[in-house]
Length: 318
Image 1 (cartoon, one colour):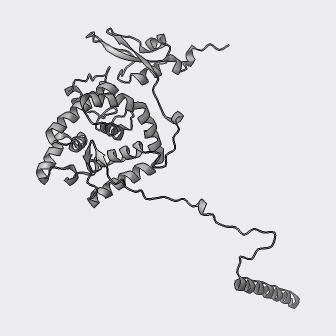
Image 2: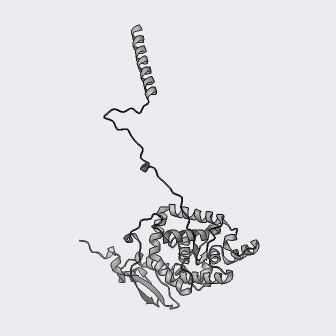
Image 3: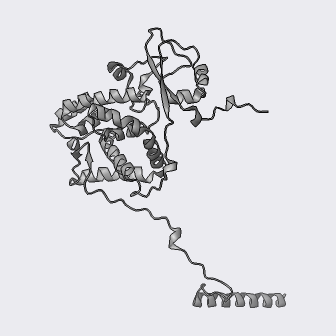
């Protein structure tokens, strides 16, 4: 018993001595066979604040960056859209695909080119439907679409027709510009409505978008468009490395005219060597599996080059 106590005492003394030595000289001593671990600065993620542009315009109209509140609002949208990198890359790729369709129509109507970024802000160039029922790239409401001449029913919904919807949006912008006097207010009115913007201008006794106190969505709206313009127009300056082959594009198409009903659009697609899926992607305004055309209207249908797509069901396997 005494021997065991003595052994235990010796062990405690040795352990205490080791502890005191370590405490005195530290724990960083290494043997000749060891390499002292180091934390590399490269392992730390660095996130940078963004320098605001010295000046920026929307549709040729200066943004008052000398106003600190305006600068902060722009900074917010630049940060949010730049550092949501996956979404930014997708928007850059889709812009390359759809801007060539939208740009000449804007030019035809005399609408500034910057409005293409409004469509991008509205839908991300996806054929989406909002909870309120706004539809397509330009997020057009059913009543508005019909007012401007679009055909909208269960069989056909031309809000999904990129060219026709862009023409409706252009007419709306022109009407708003005539009403409010600036393109910036016309853009804001696309979000809040002409009546909504008119009411707030009158209530707050101002004439400029940047002086308006608006609900959160409309307050951010023009700034998000500005941020997308700045980032997508200068994406390499914002750190995005995208090779040409990474960008999206549409296949070459030919236009066919149809003035009759079509009972089976899948069969029509097959006649042109493409799948029903591909046919619908290029003609999303055709909402059903058939085309009802009792009024004998003439419809232009886009047929993509079949060599750009592999129609696997036509392949014969042995």
